[in-house]
Image (cartoon, rainbow, N blue to C red; front, side, top):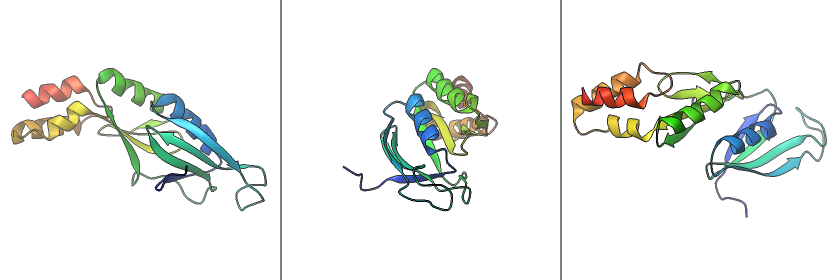
Length: 159
């Protein structure tokens, strides 16, 4: 059954590679149907992979090999809530270590240019702390980080 709402992500011929990486990296992720072009199109030939159905942590996605006309930007990202530092490190290192790049405040980008927020639940709790001063300290600590360091966030929250 086709999902009623699916995220369509544009790739330049690498949708299947990206889908396979996401399926290997994140739980509840899989590659589904691969559809080949029934004829030539501006960025490909008949028989090339045109679309790939996949899920990322249960979210239905469609990878479209649309060519070089459009690229990913930070205007769209997957935010992945992590339970501990080991999980945070594992996801961050998988993305960055597979040709991706680090950014700030828990953000990184995979080698296809798609942005990811690897966000520990401890950070979410800290910046939502009803104690405004504690939340501000945690937020200011986060603003200085690339990958989130949970121990440093918790220390800043405590003051």
